[in-house]
Image (cartoon, rainbow, N blue to C red; front, side, top):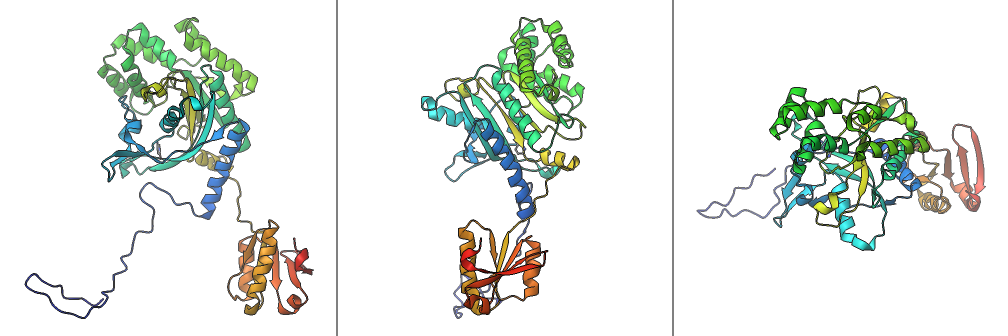
Length: 446
Ligand SMILES: Nc1ccc(Br)nc1
């Protein structure tokens, strides 16, 4: 680098105009903290996972949608003390707008449904696979982005919606080799909580806060849970009764506690009966402690868990009948779930179920002479026009290099374009790994 004396205030130092070479400042080649690259092998696994998400969604008659990854921060300003709010990846843009990288997809769905209004007939059955973000202090070293599969049904007030959604997730698990021995669904309803808190005349606005606190059960000490419940003015009696109900693991016991007249018990009974008809009873269990950590759930809630208990929740969802009205829209009954792309991969690794997804390029085409590069391009185009995958060797390379690349891309056929054959309109084909070799007219290649 040639240092150029800088022109000082006192005068300018004349120097010939010349380029001061920029230092090639070495940049950090890793992706930003908490984010991932998807090089080819990882991208094949991601595509395999997403293709299964999308195939199941298609089987259930859902339509694909997507939304901006950047949304107004206002979509996520909820006052129930959720972790998702504490970790919002938000900022002020150059137009002084408060915006956020979406931490979940459901609020975007609600926004689009309201925007579409009556132009979209009910029931709406939409699915999306989208990247979601959180800003977590790196002290915990966790990821800041993941991809979530969502399926949502808008306009169906009955638990047939939730039963259908759980069936779609069971269908997904079966497709990738996961059975009821590997995972299960814990199912409950926030109406259980509502009925218990109702006994103690707990005001409605505290209900969501109580749910968010209870969702921390098992993650923070029980004493802390009680302390936080006291902080939202729940009486000791209400807290003790609540915690006792939350330990219930059977619908029969729940009915004994709440009576059979309430919606919570009747809806859960209907759901378990529908599960019998769908054929996934062995996958589900009632567990009153499931409340999920999102403020907007209003009814049935469920989460997929690994039976060995080593992993975090695989997926989760439930009914959210009031979300649209919180955005000023007409209320429609709604239910949905989110299924992240990380825990499921950990589970598949644990169970030895990761699929083999090698790169497979059927053909490799190579000119044996630099003057035949054009001919090789023709051959490649003929094959590609017939739907054949071709890796065209683009430089003059020794055969040893070509064979090595053919092996790396798992090519089945090596097509050599040589001058003698080409003059007769022919090329030479080697079926790799078999020793079989023959000449063929280019027009007959397929
Ligand atoms: N909501 C959310 C977003 C991103 C990640 Br990673 N986990 C949860």
